[in-house]
Amino acid sequence: MSSDPLKLPQQQRETFLNRALDRVRRTWKDVRDGAVAIASGGDIGADLPAARLEAVRRQIADCIGGPGGEFAARARAADLGHLYLSFDDTGRRRFLILLAERFATDGDAMTIGVDAWREARTVEARVKAERRMKEALTPPRLRLLRQFNALPQGVKFLVDLRADLLAVRDMSPQLAALDDDLRELLESWFDLGFLDLRQITWQSPAALLEKLIAYEAVHEIKSWEDLRNRLESDRRCFALFHPRMPDEPLAFVEVALVRGMAGDVQALLDRDAPTGDPKTADTAIFYSISNTQRGLQGVSFGEHLIKKAAEALAHDVPGLKQFATLSPVPGFRRWLDKAAIEHAGAIFQQPGDAERYQSLKSLARSDVADTPGTRDFVHRMAGWYFAQRNGQNQPIDPVARFHLRNGARLERINWPADRSANGWAQSYGLMVNYLYNLNRVEANHESYMRDGTVVVSRSLRELTQRTHALE
Image (cartoon, rainbow, N blue to C red):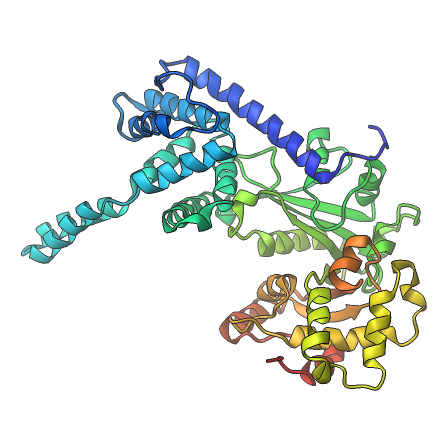
């Protein structure tokens, strides 16, 4: 493997997408060649023009209710999926609108079922009417979506199709309903009981390591040497896999084995730092957690991933005493810049706070460690930030919601902790530690879900309690 810098992550993702599409096309060609493919009346056109919508509608209908057995149904589904992959963005949007509007729940059948249930006079008649209502409530498009589950690469196809759907779902209630159907289907297929945790090492297949680079969403992996550093003996990487997508990580977490609570991500990522001895480590720092499949948005893996990784680490490194994150604070800079304009009188409570804020705004990233007084100011502003709530009485920070919902404790505020361009742009370099006390996570989770209780460490309790939500 070369140590040359890699392509940008977006370019890498496009490369992987093209490879995945080619693999699906080749696989489904074998299925289609085993039976007579459904005729679509000639070339459809990449943008699925209006004149060809009826031909595609008939093809979808044949997939749902056409003649023949299971083999013929698979061939029709493969043919339709192959057609979908040939569309450009416009064609896919039109296909999804067609599927959402023309193959939704049958309102007339539902009305007939309700009337039959109301008029039923016997248990047998009522059971029959309930069965008819259940059938009426199942949109025909669900039968089509389930057919793809039987195809090689079919589950991956549906995950990617939902990624396309998420980009357009707000265009109409019908598209939102189609997304609900597909999300519920994927939730059932991606039940946590089906998922496997695997450790990724430098000896893992190159194709998998490439995906790790492309999917890293928190701290960009800039070269093969950078990746190798993250897989050294004092580092760990764990990923979740589904048996129907064995080569595609669903989510992964990167871990550093250190002594004490880490508060500087550049130190953790420093390729020139000496490799530590995992036997002397007492703390596992989860410093990067990435979801890889946009089509699985809303299907939660994070809590399961962290708990399973912590269990594996506790078994592998018995000296570990605590498990914590070093997490970004993606909304802090945007919030502080807005609050400094709209609520300066409330949050700037100490003499010189306004000047400290202006100094912070003007700092270059290389100067942050040498600025006197700014650390205390940032910590106090962070206390304000974590006291803010959204309309559901939850913290406004999305990363905080994720970890607190999983049962973690807000442990420590760190500044300066991320001097990267991205870290400075989103949080002025602020990062926080969330502590996962494995004996308390369930109780913390329950209290958070029940009444929004945010569990914080003793050192942060005063900092967060002396502030309040801003109107």
